[in-house]
Length: 110
Image (cartoon, rainbow, N blue to C red; front, side, top):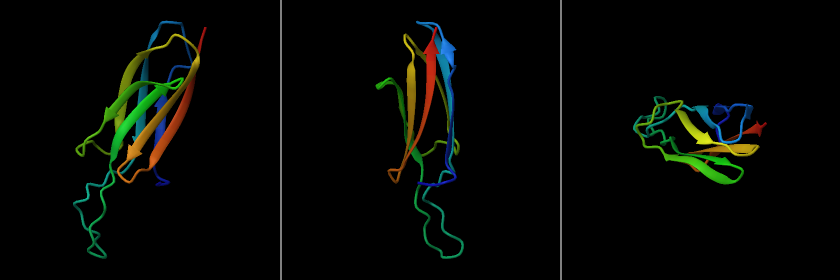
C-alpha cells in the first residue's frame, strides 16, 4: 500500500430520517498505466490503477462502481443515498495490486 494515497470523504454530520444526502469522495492516487518505462532502468512500470469503489452504510452496500483503465488520477466520485437511521459509512477503494484504501464517516439522525 502506498503512503501517498489519501482518501477524502464529505458526508453530512446530521440529517433527518428519510433525507437524501450527497456524498463526495476523492482519493489522491497517482495512476500508472503500465505502458511507461522507468527512465533509469528501462523496465516497464507496473500498472497501478484504482479499479473498484464501494460505499457501505451500516454493513449494506449503498453504492459501488467498477472503474476502468481510463479513469483519471485522483478519482472523484459523488453519489446520493437515503438515510433512515444513524450509522457509519465505510468506503473502500481497491487497487490493481489488491491494496485497499479505506475511510469511515458517521452520520446522526435527529
